[in-house]
Length: 98
Image (cartoon, rainbow, N blue to C red; front, side, top):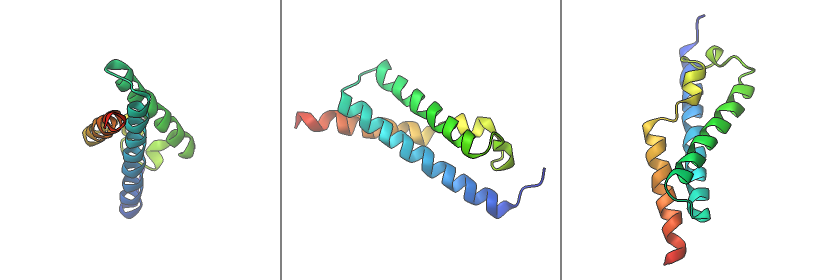
């Protein structure tokens, strides 16, 4: 299937933004709830899967039509989003203790 490069670039940009915001919100929730260790990372995994499922529905069950890489690209959280999650998690975890 042929994909129009400007559309693919736009879709990848939006996908990155949605994943980044999702990981930041998950980090904030984990910090506010005071989750530690595996519970915090479990929340990150659940939020990533939930975001991927929502994007899958938005792509009308055909992510390969909109994003090269298809389903894997939706589920892959990306290293920078994991770091963003941990950063926001520690920020919101430590804020109530000031």
